[in-house]
Image (cartoon, rainbow, N blue to C red; front, side):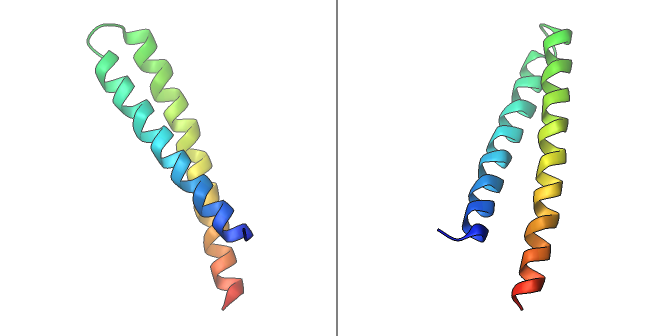
Length: 65
């Protein structure tokens, strides 16, 4: 498996994790504000990782050309 395939797989997993955390935060908003905030914070961290990974994937695509 090449590095680009690994990066794309990791990106996919991070997207799923981000969407799940956002959904959890939304569902908890009415019942437990603290847990909702924690879930949103974790989603923000995952989103930051996604953005870094997107940058790396973009750089590797440029170098491949």
